[in-house]
Image (cartoon, rainbow, N blue to C red; front, top):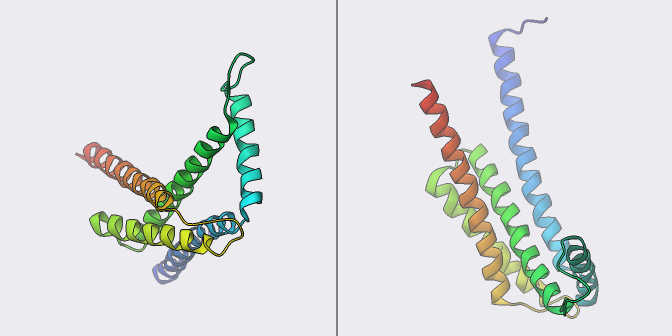
Length: 171
């Protein structure tokens, strides 16, 4: 085993922390890019994708049986709204986690994460105004924002529970 002097070890730890922050930001940017790409699909392409997902979910999770009067159009709309929620739920989690790595924690980290997610949701809807067959909806901004807020609050809550358990076990 190679022993490192304190200065060398500190340099390696600093580099690792620096890279960890860069990777965390790369994940945030990558997830925003995924959201952008999905929003940039023309309406007909986006609808085919969500309809295919709705069919798979309906068939594999028992929503459809021979006697059901199943409305695929309504279910597709529900799937699309759920996708909005989940995309921003994940964005909220990765963003608040990244800010925590930078030392932006507590209420400040939560508020900053929420602001970034809500602003991104607004710009995402605005972007859709320029995509063939798409439009902007305030209800989508609200759903996106709700997903982000719940993801952020959940992540902060889990972090608080973990820290509380660790502190309790030390005492």
